[in-house]
Length: 372
Ligand SMILES: Nc1ncnc2c1ncn2[C@@H]1O[C@H](COP(=O)(O)OP(=O)(O)OP(=O)(O)O)[C@@H](O)[C@H]1O
Image (spheres, rainbow, N blue to C red):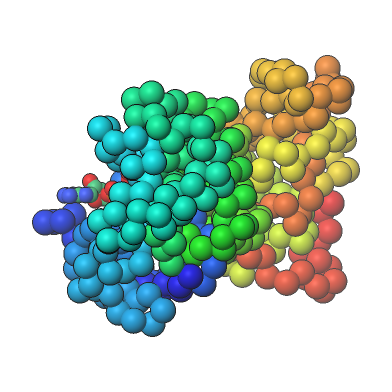
């Protein structure tokens, strides 16, 4: 096993800045997932760790040894690709054992190791088949076996599940999780699938435009997104964003009305444009009586998904979607939606950074008025 230290790493292709000053520490035995939209630089970063791309500036160290100029084979990394990259003319056993053969390991040792790995991955009965005689999931397992056979210090996964159908994806995801629990090999896994990222990661790294937007435990990143980009990227259905303006006393105004949360006082100049944001599942139906901390909701459309209802409508002219558990009654009359103040996030329009309300004290509530 090994740790990885990435320090101020950048990569340019001609005029394209693919990776822009990344700092990242991957602890020994950790499972780090790099998540981001297409083109954000995640594969380039992974390929630089593997040694398949030169580093334009900065350094990458494995166990504190700088590997910038080290050949891929000497870095102790094994990579699993999206397209499996199996040798079509070799059997499963030969594919898995190839790296051992090349490095001169004796036949008996080789067979033993291949048999052990095949058994771990449930491939024993397929050892004599060629890749063309395997399903997508089986091929992916062979690719994993080929990576595991050299007992690398680091596994690098480049979207390994994206060619599989939905059911197989879930199955392989669980298998990768089980294998990591068993082997504890330091792993870096690149994906644009947020469910994969949330379920596999010890540490989740969200990338955008060649930079890290946020890194932390999946629940921390989900619960406390540090930027509008992260807030919008994680969660399905996505977060709702309500444009608001800060008034002279630090309170947010939406559609000409003061928001009904006295706790939400921001240390921002009057006129600053922000967005208040909440997850669809954070809202509950409330009476439209003006007494509760709730926003009037103009319902337009309801979708019944069996386990939950999706309610689409508007709050002060902005499209909003909320989810309610199946079995909850949807009022026929106009209603409001209530959201706990701690479930409300706020982001500056300028730059998209998270803004925290200044600490609400009884004095601030007295000063600004308890509108709730
Ligand atoms: N060999 C190359 N030559 C020129 N530009 C490249 C090369 N490889 C990648 N890029 C560019 O670098 C940026 C990052 O690409 P990269 O493949 O790392 O993104 P990604 O996040 O892995 O995307 P995807 O999820 O689509 O694979 C993109 O703008 C891409 O077009």
